[in-house]
Amino acid sequence: MLVLLPPSEGKASSGRGAPLALESLSLPDLNPAREAVLGELVELCTGDEEKAREVLGLSEGLRGEVGKNAGLRTAGARPAGEIYTGVLYDALDLATLDAAAKERAARSLLVFSGLWGAVRVSDRIPSYRCSMGVKLPGLGALGAFWRAPMASVLPEAAGDGLVLDLRSAAYAAAWKPKGEVAERTASVRVLHAPTRKVVSHFNKATKGRIVRSLLTSGAAPQDPAGLVEALRDLGYVVEAEAPAKAGRAWSLDVLVTEVH
Image 1 (spheres, rainbow, N blue to C red):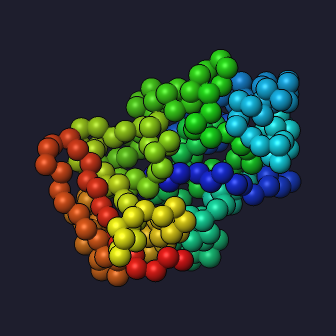
Image 2 (tube, rainbow, N blue to C red; image 1 turned 30 degrees about the vertical axis):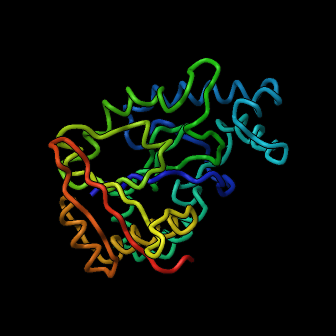
């Protein structure tokens, strides 16, 4: 199983560890693209601070993020699972998983990123600020920039098992599973059962709980139908229909009654 996650806007500090070693990251065929984005981002943020803030879409209160990006090559690096914070990652709570679940997380979780393309939670990265919606002056819109590198790397990373896609729209744009990979891909919406509306906070929190439940239970569904069964066994209320056409991903709705 490969689980595709969005990053978080907020991130923990880099800490005092050794700096980024690009060659140590998973999916090494993405490294030329990573170096291109990293190089332009560092150059942008070591130049005109106001321009950098505008390009990155940062408010006055986030001005310090420009300086953080300027120092990315020398900043300390930590496992990505420790860098990403926010509602989904708080609910996932990787640090409190037992050893077996942590091993499953290291194998199966892939976090998409405007800067790195995609990283595993065990990959050591510095804290940064660069969303997939950023349009860099040289490389252009990052969502479009990453499509070609991702298309050449992600199908192999997906292997021959289930792909559980929990990304937000901006990050989903960087790679869309196709063909037989799409047929074993399932995307998930979380709906408030009484209103059948998506609400951002509990959508993210429930997705984090779903991933944690799968990791701690040791469930290993091989396809979307197996995922539906596994989630129901774990106590989730799931609505799903198989796609009407070949080469399409499944869409699952998880219904929740409490907003928390």
